[in-house]
Image (cartoon, rainbow, N blue to C red):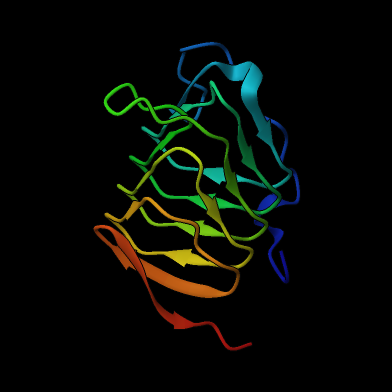
Length: 135
């Protein structure tokens, strides 16, 4: 992360099956979770990694988010990928099989049911692309 000393001493958190981390987020099926470097996952998030969840480097996830690689309601399953430097607003839900692109920003309280490309801002229920991010 450019010009950010916040993660200077970052270390991988201890993750135990179904138990809150010291940051108060929980993972089920932890063997399916790939956690990148300098990630920031907010309190009270839930991650079900039964079919794989990949959180790449420098991803930020707001509090109270839910990430599902499996849905028991409609029997959908698939790996979820959050690409490098993506940001997920608090209280958002990501459903199975979705990829959120590099540098993309998801607004708070969004429902992500389809892939989100790189370098965009998206939000809503379901999340829609609002604009491209210009560097």
